[in-house]
Amino acid sequence: MKYIIHIISVFLLATMLASCVDNEAMRQRLSYVSQCNRADTVFTEA
Image: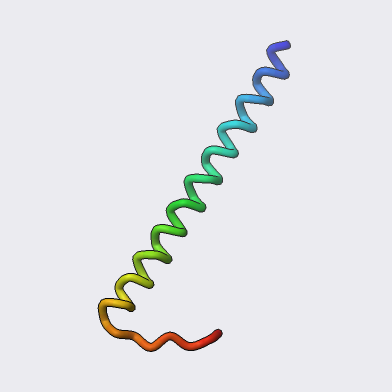
């Protein structure tokens, strides 16, 4: 039983860490786009 609880705890911790990294990356991208908008940068298709 302890083994199962340990596995579940590790899985939940890994999931939370992964979502934090994704959120931070999204914040950085949004910040970059916001800075580009303030500088009147012309966006092109990539």
